[in-house]
Amino acid sequence: MRKLQAQGVHHITLTGADRQTSIDFWEGVLGMPFVFDQPNLDNPDEGHLYFDPGDGRLITVFTNETRQPDPRRTPTEPGCVHHLAFNVSKATFSQAVERLDERGIRHSGPKDRGFMDSIYFTDPMGLLIELACYRFEPPAGCTHGDVMIEAHRLRVERGDYNIQEVHLADAIEGLVQGRQQTLSASRAPADPYSSG
Image (tube, rainbow, N blue to C red):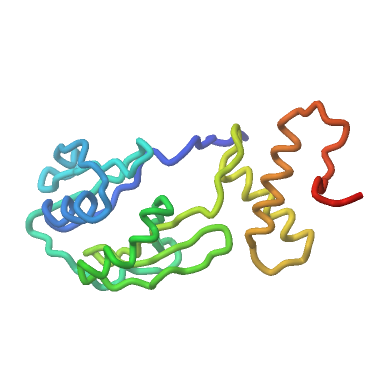
């Protein structure tokens, strides 16, 4: 038996209401360019809109002009999607409250997640959306996942309840040390300001 090895999210497809509501939310609120449009090939009564969330992957939405937006929270039972999270820059995150408020969109306010900051709100269909902003940049040649697994190991080893910035900083230091060579005889921390 062998795995069917995934290599990233190809796309996520959501059931939307009418076409304009989808365009207004995904491009008009979240800034995702509307990049492709065709009928739903499995249902000729629906459209199929494609949006680029910023990494070249796709968010797609099935639309139907007879459906109206329903802002009630989508189901969260087992097997249902709880929320979708999108990466934003620190500059964008710092503007999120103001920009959501100016549209009258109710939100959670900023949330401290240890390794990232988050804010939550719902789309016009009641799907919970998260804007997430990492608190770190991975070293060259590493991914966010590389840092996260090392930070997790440090957190568990130290007996800490949840991830904190110290775990991230120490994980990044360890990854650099393990991947980048040096001409120094010692890589130990040093204090060039001490008197003796």
